[in-house]
Length: 622
Image (cartoon, rainbow, N blue to C red; front, side, top):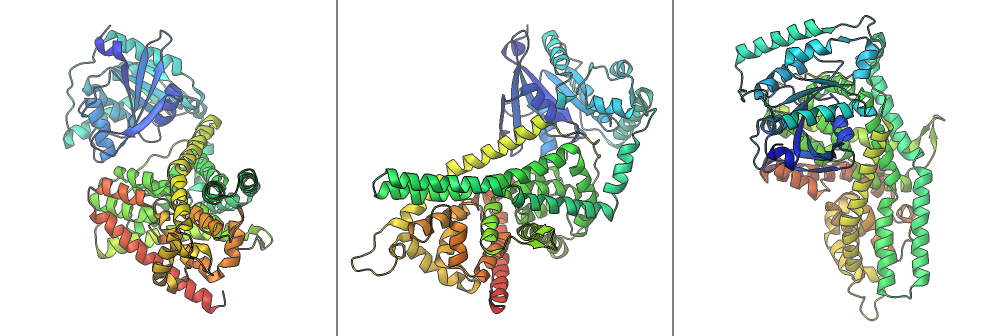
């Protein structure tokens, strides 16, 4: 037994995007995973562990998707260097598992030919094999195995089929310690690329025969979903339904959470004697954190739709539909994935721009990604919409709050496209590179994968509540409580606190856009995370005695004008209210120049949008 194997067998998963590589990684490692970054770079590093039936440990590395070892983006460079053993502090993998979509082997064969030249023990995992069988594809597995010089295992990662066979084959290759040959891979020239392409085509024709009964259903569905007109109509309808559901489905659970925190605050206030501790618990922690956690159902519903669309294969088709629109705005076709990721959070969205190899295209996408409406804005939007937008039906069918939420998301998308167009037209002129991608087969969503992803999102949100929101709410409570008002003071006690002083000092800057001093105070801790602004408002109004726990929305409806509420929404469409996003931009660009530019233009847009919104709404009597 080799020394490397005695420690732990290192297995690298390599494959094209949309090959089911991450699903296979999850099936192999389950919950034994950890996510970090590679040393010296910002590419995400996902590693997990499994134990063989003989008790041996296998370490599995999920590498970024690539079509070739001829790396052109940071993600692809990490995959190449990991396979070749060039990463600092990383040993070469003992076994390379090439994960392929069994229904689409054309492009992966070129990658397999490159991996053969690396010389590491190689296994080909034909994933989604059930779909290939259902489509009638005829794959000569034995002949293909002989052709590529590597064993082949058929898998269905979402159903955990073939996992034991794959582990056994990896175990066997690792124990043998036999390499396929010397590491001979090098950057190929144009002639070698053409030769490899012809060889891949020859292998494909020899060992993969077209289906005897073609999958006409996929073609029929795509003829509608990818139609230049009806496809966009269907995509818009799907997005519309998604935002309607955010309000209608989440309301009962959100009301239950709201009532629970109100009961908790009341109970704590009755049990504990009056004093600073009771005030901190009820007005600081419970009112602050509870006002954010009440929006967890909306966030989970949004992610439920996103995960479903990804698992079915529709998300790639949405990218295809929007490519022409994004190209017209000066964005690279690959920018769709980072912008879509930014709907969840701008941070992973900005990090995923590494798939764009052109520097100017990548910077443009980074600069506009925070304009996409992230999940952290949902608490702010939901709070203001709940306070000022009546729950009425439009045309007897649509929920008005859902329509407003849809409009806010649409405003973020349109503004991102407009800003990108301005950047590429006036600052970085040049042709936009074409977007090439493979459309995956339609798949049935895996309930376990959906549940796992929703749990991860809920866990992230709750961790933010514990690590970021809770300490900040204690700070806001302190600033809103101390110092005490002087003897003989007639105004509210909070006016004499540090928070009151800060708010009244900077409020004149925001007066033209209709912001009160409480609103300006909420913007400051809101820089840590957008949703903290909601918690800050809950604490400030609770400490000021102007709100009961759980009644923040009603308090704002009473305290703010409609014009101010709408201006606050307009501000949050554009404002860079997230310090972590600015930090990631600095890390990705290795310069403070770009986060400074981003902060400046987004603040200017936010102020202008809020100013116009407030002045127009105020003039109309709002």
